[in-house]
Image 1 (spheres, rainbow, N blue to C red):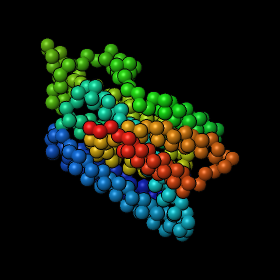
Image 2 (cartoon, rainbow, N blue to C red):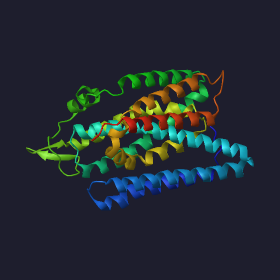
Image 3 (spheres, rainbow, N blue to C red):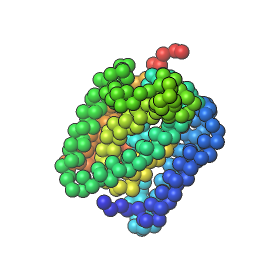
Image 4 (cartoon, rainbow, N blue to C red):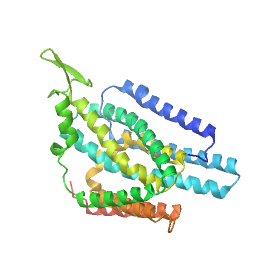
Length: 316
């Protein structure tokens, strides 16, 4: 898989991710176990979004410097922006599932931050591997594009029918399997993953939560990664747009946690986006929808859905 990005930009990206994880795991860890307020979550969300746009600006400059073409730089930076927005949008559905898991296990607010920090690290590693595999498959077997496209369309239809329905975590097969594999305490022991009861070392509910968050991200990665391949085949754009969307996931979780009821129709919009992207992927050899059009459609669907959600939100 070849990329238009120069080697030095890959190194800058890796350095940025390492620095971001350092902030999350070292600097924020000094805060200890404490709940994250809406104001703090909003500030961090804006910071991550701003950093994503700054990186895209650097990417634009690097492509222009490498190719000498402003048109190519514009096209590639637009691909990054579209991919980033799609991945960020699909992450919202991921967050709603996280909310359900945290509510089901009654995770204290002060412990949720650590779960998300570990989940983000796992998601970055997992998605990097899946993107490399997906890119290799597409380079070897072009017809897989149609399989990915059909899968996204079916996922979108399924999401539409499931929207508005209360998911039942009790019937989750992953949860049933985890409970068979490990004895779990009924009580939390601070931020520990294991505790001792009756002389035996057993898991705490926090370990169960992290395991379920990891399984959830695997499921959502299967949906979101084919979606970005419908926009671009460049591994650099696919990887960076995914990672930048994930890095802001922790802050976005606490922000959406406070306003989740106001966006009760958002899943319908995400379902339509998936169907659109899947259709775009299946039509790629017949008619290639311009990236700018894709970006406009995604932004338009999100704007309409969020506006209508806010307008029809139940009074609380």
